[in-house]
Image 1 (spheres, one colour):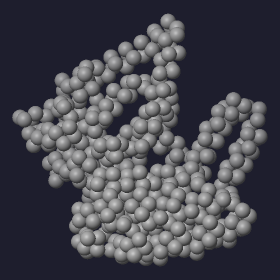
Image 2 (tube, rainbow, N blue to C red):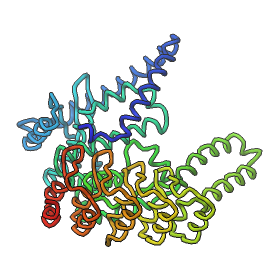
Image 3 (cartoon, one colour):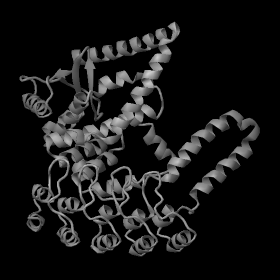
Image 4 (cartoon, one colour):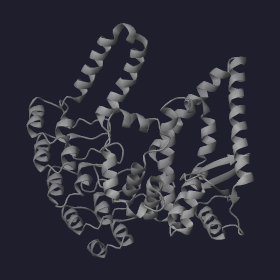
Length: 448
C-alpha cells in the first residue's frame, strides 16, 4: 500500500504533527491556554456529534435488507482493503448536491453518501459509485479523520491544513482506483462530480483537462491553495499518470502565478495598512513587481514560449540551462512539451541534462517525449545521454509507459536504444505485464 500513498501526504503530516506538538506545549504552559484549547475541542466535538446524530436518525443505513447489492459491494471492498470492521454507510437526501464523506461518531467509522451520488447505482453507474465508496473507505483506512484531530492547531493555519488535505485526497483516489481495479471508473466517478450523473459520459475528457490546465493567474492559484480538495481535472490527471496514459505537460504550475500570489498577499497587507497615505506609491510598486515577474527573462519562460532567439540569447549570456522552476520544470522539458526539436537540440548542445525529473509527477524530458507522434525526440534525447532505463520512485521506466500506452513504435525504438524489458516496478510488474493488462497484444509480443 505504501506505493499508493502520495509522497506529499507523509511530508505534510510530519510537519503538521511537529508543529502541533509545539502548539500543545505552548498552550499547556498556561491555565488560560489549556482552557481555551479544551473549550475549542469541546465545542467542535459537540457540534460534530450533533450533526452525526441527525444523520444517523434520519438517513437510510445500508444493510442486507436495505440496498443489499450496494451493501455487499461495501463488504467486499472492506475485505479487499483489509479493514477489520465494516463502517456504517448511510444515504441521505442532498438537494441535488453531489458529495460523500467519511467521518467518525464516538469511535464508530461512518461513510455518508448523498442521494444524488447514490443514484448512480440505478443509472448504469455502479462502478463509478463503487469508486466513490472506495475513496471514502480509504480515508478511514488511512485514519485521516483521527489524524486531523491530532493536528488540530494546524487546521487553523491557512494554506497548511489545506495542503495536507489535498495530499490525502490524492492518496485516496489512488487507493480507490487500485482496490476497485478500475481506473476508468475512477476517472468517470470524478467526472460525475464535475458535471453530474447524466452528462459525464459525454464529456471530452482531454479537452476538459486541457482547458483547466490553461486557467492560471493569481486568483486561480489562490483558489486552489485555499481548497481542501485538488481540482477535479488534476485528480483525473493524477489517476491517468499512475495508470501511465496521461498526456504530459498539463497542469504545470505557473511560476509567475505562485510568485505573484505570494507577492500579492504581502502587498494586500501593506496596502491595507498604508493605503490612505501611500496609495500611488504602493500601486507603482505592485505594477513594477508584476511587470518584472511577467518579463520574459527566464530561460524556462523563453522555452515555454518557443522563443528561439531569446533562448539562444540567454544561453549565450551564460544562463543556467538546467535551471528548474517552482515545479522542477527545465527549459528542455518545456521545449519537449512544445514539440520544438530545434529548441531541444539548442539546449542539449548547450549542456542541458535530459535526466532531471520535475517535482510533481517525476517526468523527465524522455518520458514527456513519449507523447509525440514521432520517435525523433526520443532518439535525440538518448543520443544526448538520456538514460533509457531510468526508473522513478515507483520503479516506472519509459518503456513501461510506452507499453501501457500501446505505442508499438516507441517500444521498438526504446528497445533498439537499449531499454531493458526485464526491469520491474515496485510492484513487480514489467513492461510486458503493463501491455498485456491493457490488451495491447502487438506491444506485448514485442516485449516477450
